[in-house]
Figure 1: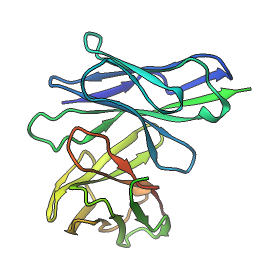
Figure 2: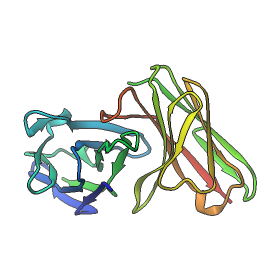
Figure 3: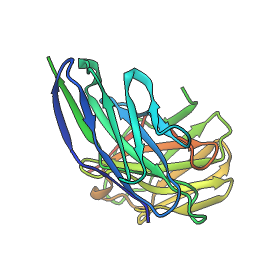
Length: 116
Length: 112
């Protein structure tokens, strides 16, 4: 069975500092990985995705993530955060083993709080 | 933005009453999903559909049923609402498996 672990439930950081949100996954089949962002009282918006190819993927709002198969990780990074990046971030995996319909399995989320 | 509309956006209901939430899409996507979001649990899959009248259970399906009679509509029904079903419910769609899903704005349901 597939699973996703987000290692930090909350990450406080000062404005213009770099940030890394950690995500590890468990799967025995090929995986497809996603990061979503949720602003207060809104739905989830896709930040970036890894389907195949280059292991470094770039997304919206200056975020990037690196797929590391040997460490089963997909950490999200941003070199300089803004107040507007304050939100909850979710890592998700889709791993089709021929049984399920490729549903997304989510981690429990990381709340990023950017302080001035 | 993907064309997904959830209704209602907010609802307060009493314990024991049936409740139906609606998800409507204009993207003609094959796959539709219902998730619930609770603090400390992230998003958990309730039910999903892979075509008209084709549905299956997710991780937390007890107490919920779904129906999909048209490609564009996916209904989630709480047969007899309980306080443990107080949550934010999200509908999601995608056109192919193993690709990103697009989410609606959510329905905040409170069972009193």
